[in-house]
Structures are given as structure tokens and as C-alpha cells.
Amino acid sequence: MALKIYTKTGDLGKTSLIGGTKVPKSHIRIDTYGTVDELNSHIGLVGDYFDEPQSRSILKEIQDRLFTIGSSLACDPDKEPLMKIPDLKEADIIMLEQEIDKMNEILPPMKFFVLPGGHVAVSTAHIARCVCRRAERCCVNMQEQEIFVDPLVIKYLNRLSDYLFVLSRFIAHHLGVSEIAWKPRV
Image (tube, rainbow, N blue to C red; front, side, top):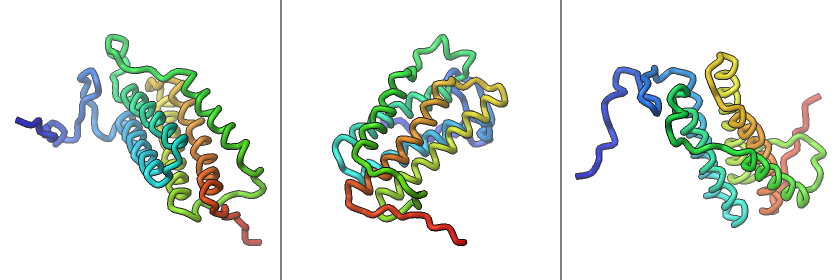
């Protein structure tokens, strides 16, 4: 017999963190890991639209790290030390920085603000960047409310949004699509 996907335990607006602690579905922790999940879906979409092998491999690795972040955020911090939750590492941030540097070696210098668009893959990378920034803001909000969030998670999301911006430019360059310069109305 197949497992049922629905449990009906959330029908009254509560959900359980990893570790069993019940919280309202409106809790900032739930909103935060839901935003990370949304980001992970957008990253998958970027990889579906941009089939360059190196970038696709990095995007899969990023998706794995986002699952790690989601697990950390979904865990009751008082119970986490007793559990085997995967950890984010400083090396994960270094990998993003190295990938940013590799792409920037190929890209022309930026001389204007760039509007998202020009190709669906470029626009999708920009959407992922925006969702990443929202996930980062949610984590900072948790931190400001003195709700535990690993500082490495905030650092990773900050660097990931930088990576996604540079990736959007790299996608345009790779596909031969002109970047759209923002020309402010004067």
C-alpha cells in the first residue's frame, strides 16, 4: 500500500517542526523555510531553461544546499543537537564565490543597471535572485526576533543572490542575448 501524502494534521493551521514541536503555519520559521523551498523550485527552473553543463551541475549542488538549509530551518533548534541534520559549511560559500569569479572573468564589465529580461532563462535567474533575497530577509527577520538561525545560512543566501545575478548575466552572454540597460527617465 502506498503512503498517503496527506496527513490531515495541518487542517487546523498548525504544523510540526522536525523534532515534533507544533507551531502555527504562519510562524516566521515556516514562512522562511517555505521561501527557501520556493527558491529551490526556481533554481530547478533556471537549470531547465539553461542547459549549460557546468552551470547545471552547480545549480544541482545549490539545490542540495538549499535542502540542507531548509532542514536546518525546519528543525526545532532546542532539539537539533540531538538530531543528524546536515550542516552548511564555509566551503559552500567559497564555491559560490569561485563560480562568481569564473563567470566574471568571461563577462564584460557592467556599465549600467540591468533590467531582467531578454530571454526566459535570464528572467528566471532574476526571479530566483529575488526569491533568494526574500529568503535572506526572512532569515534576518528571524535573527532580529532572536529566533535561532545559523549565521552561515544568511551568509550563504547573501552570496547565492550575488551568484544568481552574475549567472543571469552569464546566461545572456552564453546565449548571445543583449543585456537590457536601464535608462532612467529624466
